[in-house]
Amino acid sequence: MPSPPRSPARPQRRPQPPLRVPRPPERAMRPVPPPRRPRWAMRAVTTLSVVVLASAGIGHAVVSSLDAGIARIDAFKDMKNRPRGGHGMNVLLVGTDARDRVSERDRRAFRLGGQPCHCTDTMMIVHIADDLERATVVSLPRDSYAEMPAHTDQNSGRRHGPHPVRLNAAYAEGGPQLTIRTVENMTHVKIDHYLEVDFTSFMRTVDVLGGVEVCTPTPLKDRYTGLDLAAGRHTLRGGQALQYVRARYVDGASDLGRMKRQQRFLAALLDRTTSSGVLLNPMRFRDVTRAVLGSVRADTGFGTDELLALGRAMRNFSPSSSEFTTVPIGQLNYQVKGIGSTLKWDPAKAEKLFAAVRDDKPLAEDRAHRSRVPAPVPVEVAPETIRVQVANGTGTVGLGKRVDAALAATGFATTRRPVTAPAHVPHTLVFYDPRWDRSARSLAAALPGSELRAVPGQGPLLKVTAGADFKDVRRVRFDDPGRPEQSVLRGNEVVC
Image (cartoon, rainbow, N blue to C red):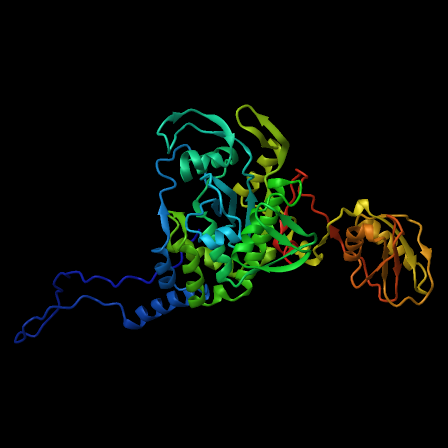
């Protein structure tokens, strides 16, 4: 990535040879001073450098002071036979389960007891496009089947040959170096930088930003982490946010469901960072970043210039600038002797995905097209499982047929035979049996402004009466976390 300009160093004086110039016979020759750069030129160059840095919203001196506070690790020491580099920058973002700096109070409040496994809890490849206008995040499931390259165990000192493992075990056996080698062998993507975050740094990041808003169409309750959220919008502080991204038992999807929540949270975190003015205020940036970077580890090459480049990129980011996906899974519950259940990647689809990352190509469809189409609303029940009878409650001829067709187009199982209701119904109504309340909320999400009316004993068939206020049907999206197929989402499609 291009490095930001630096202020030019002051030119050194060099001895000059005597100049042969005519002189009056009575005057002694005086030494001629070396030529100097005009002071106005020095001022112009310095001013230009300051303007360039200021346009990024971040001062070089500010970032330099932060650089000194980051814990460093030589993550790429003696690495050979690496993939060929592509365009843009690839950062391996790793979340570990280290909790030694978590206070006893937070341990009890957020269920952080027990012994850590000293392995990776989360792993993502973050690709920053060469033009600094797009970020692609690819989640790598911790339970992925992986072939560990030959290495020396960092704990026992024993030499191991290649052997199968779950992906998160690479960190426990060989730390960041072995983790990077394993990821590069699996993806053929060259990792440029390594960034490691633990529980403490994660909570601190969220807290210094004043919390991050998430929304959930379904209640989320996990007895292991203590997460307990009702359906709707919530502003999560550090500890509760950690519960949200760690929860694995709120549905039957385990790690795949958790990764989707992590992606949503990362999109919301990006939205909070870029919309709160942090990146436009050098002092605010310094205060927030100092609190965050004081508890992370990074490779030795991730310095001031890289932080400035990343800050410049993020200043232009918005949720729609980011895209999120999970490596395609070909087989769930892939059994490996001595290891147990793993997730095996789909080789063809995974290669296509990582080829796009290497070639610096977007994964989602054309951004201009997507910006014209409203993002679908997430719902808690798959629309194809919801039966709907549409009625026309207005005097507008053909409205019932139009609503029925629009609901069917977004996936609902309509009867395709709309009926006529009493005319002059002012508001669109959704009648439902309370036993199917989740289906009713999913249907109402597709009908902006509609009112829910409970009718005990009505049964599973939901009934919609289109009123005078009907405008259109909004697309909905049901994310089944247990489905292994790949999906790509823009950040603006998952934030509240």
